[in-house]
Length: 118
Image: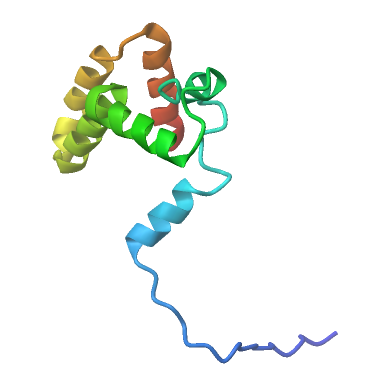
């Protein structure tokens, strides 16, 4: 039995150049990203359940407050420090970030999410 001829199909569209940031974003939004077992949301579900957030402006306000004054601010600080750190600084930075976890469950979740992400 002979080999079949290779078939090449074209949509007629030019190939798109995809940069690394776009690839990272699509990986984060992928169903395979390890978020399924990680439910820490800074209390968003409770805020919706209690009626504190009922619409887009309410969500915008809640997110703004979380990022300015809540644990979302802390997460943003650690992410910024991690992004700017040299590779040899990351282990110490990780230990410091874990020391600031507000609860044992939050620390355990951060460790598991980090391990799954890595």
